[in-house]
Length: 121
Image (cartoon, rainbow, N blue to C red; front, side, top):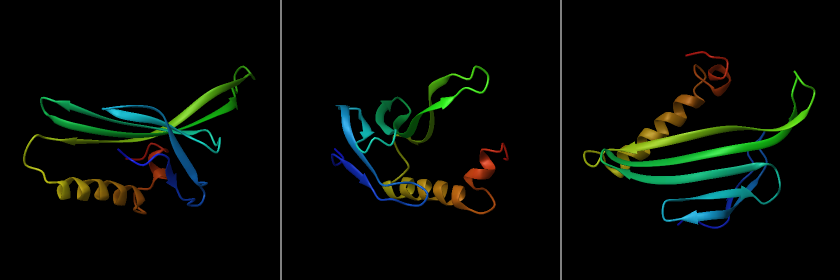
């Protein structure tokens, strides 16, 4: 079990976030930011015939004005990562390195999140 709460240090432009458990079972947890910043996270794990799956999602909830109706509505954006591990052939180190390659690819100046959300691929 991960710590409760999970404290994430501020990293510009993101504020410090403290995720406290609001729901938990043997397969994962749901946590919310205790500072009221609108952030939450979902972590879950599953076992399948083709291996294990580990999933992390970070969500930002906010109220925003709908440009079509002019009404303020709750909306959310999210980012997630899913790690699929076959039942054999891959070590913990292999998966750690694979996730690191994913984050390094996203951080690379030729890729970047900004380019991805502009439909560049």
